[in-house]
Image 1 (tube, rainbow, N blue to C red):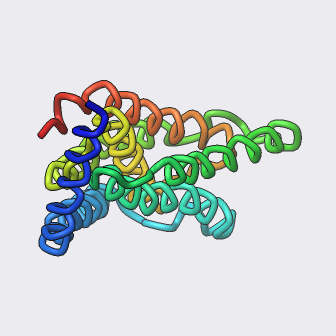
Image 2 (spheres, rainbow, N blue to C red):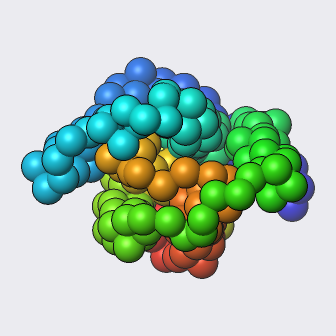
Length: 209
């Protein structure tokens, strides 16, 4: 039985290798499309991108982007590996945990040193943007992954959810006046993890092939 399973995985990998060249575009285009759509939509709805950082400088935006762009880049790489049977993706999952570990460390330091008011201003807009844009970007990731052949559908769904949240945060960060790690944890990280949980639960249904 194990030999038959190994043979099946090897056959899928061999067949996949022949189609990967054709499949790259089908995988990448939905991801780029939803990222562009999120940015354009916010540009049409909101004004004064980057103006919230006129007083605080670029540091808050760089922290937000450092976190969100890491997810938006690492998640597709992980999905690509998950969509190719027989490939080891465990190390990429560990890499996806690193941005969250960094935010957790900064959050602890911020709690000890910061006196910023929480939740601050415009948190409702931030939460709305994450709630609307994360599922949109998640849908793009689902479309992309369906052009591959993932065998662990829950794991792929979770990573697709992380991509959705990372793209939403990347698009909204230039408009966001909120600062402080508590703000980032509550209004960015928690919505992203919620989207990842939704992906984990719905992955077997959305990504089966």
